[in-house]
Every structure is written in C-alpha cells, then in structure tokens.
Image (cartoon, rainbow, N blue to C red; front, side):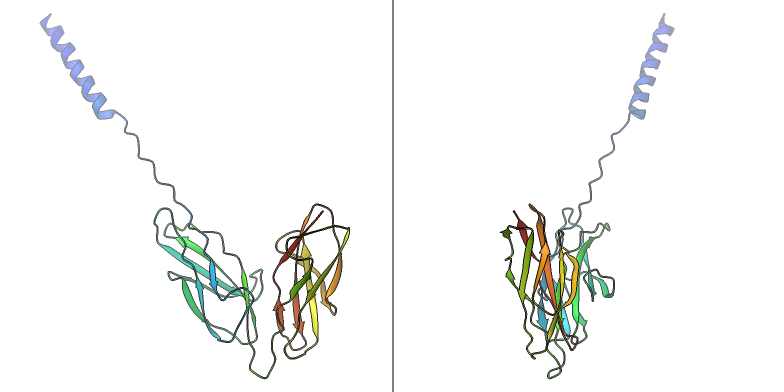
Length: 231
C-alpha cells in the first residue's frame, strides 16, 4: 500500500511539472504598421510662373502613427502622366532644390515612405512654369473660366464652354481643350483658334474640363481643372 502511494505521488509531481513545462504561451501580437499621411505641396504653387531657375521645392511634413522615420520621394516631370520624369529623388528633408530649364512647363508630386517601407499615396500633382529669357517670349497667362463657373449646375443637352486667355507679347493663341467625367479630363479638341466650344452632355452628371493656351513661340500655359454638373 505504501509503495502504491509513493507511485501515485510521483505521477502527480511528474504531471504537474509537465504541464508547467509544456504549457503554451500566447505570442504577443505584432503592431500593425500604419501608412504615412500624404504630403501637402507648398511651393512652387499650382500654375505659378517662376523666374528663379535654381528652385527650392517645399512641402509639409507627413505624420506616421507608429512614429517611424519618414523619407520623401519627389518626382518632377514634363507631363502630368509622369511619363518623362526628369528628377526622382528620395530625401529625409521637406525641401529640395533643383536646377531647371528656362521657358518650360513642369509637373511635380511627392509621396512619403516610412522606415518599414510603407508608402503613402502621391500628393496632388501641381504644375508651374519657368520664364524664358527676358525679351525673348513670355508664357501666355493661365486661362480663366467665363462659363460655366466651377460648381455651376446647368441645363440642356449642349453646353458652351467659354474661357479667356491673353499673351503679354500679343502673340496669337491656340487652345487645347480637355473634357470628361473624371478629374483628369482627356483631350477633346486640339489647336482651337477660338475660346468657345460646344460639348454634348448627359443629365445628372459632373463634368471636368481645362484649357491649355499656346502661343506661336512654344510658350504654354495650363489652366486649372474646372467642373460643372448637369441637371
């Protein structure tokens, strides 16, 4: 009887030790990496004409929910689709200087990248212009909208787009018209010699449009994207 008691006691001790030794420990959950916020562009401003050709670009700092270090990728191109990128630099600063060509249209954008390689979306794209040499040619003034005004609600199946643009040198102007239902309207008509154009529209739809003014000396001014809604 005594031997049986000793055996049972030994088994209890063994099982107790086994449970302590092999009990599962819940792993601590790994923190989810948060994407940095999208940078806001500061300078050069949209549609700005710049006379300084060593230009310092400036944008607001992004934030990161995990407190990760943030770097920024700045892209500069000669078209808004960024098919021809002239500069693409990663920097930890919120400003960077570049040497630019005179008399050129540039587009730029910035995105944030944290130390875990999580990337924000790109900022909105902004366009600006560098002045040509004095006395050579001046870029046309950026087109201004006459009608429909941005945000207008209009009626009818045909709408007349009406805008205005002038050139400081008095050069004749031609226009490219972009129009569509997305915020990046597509080219509808090219080298228009008048500043009005009729478009067919559907009801209960928001339309976006912009105008590019071109003089006869390769000067180009790109207008803002405007929008209106049909009833």
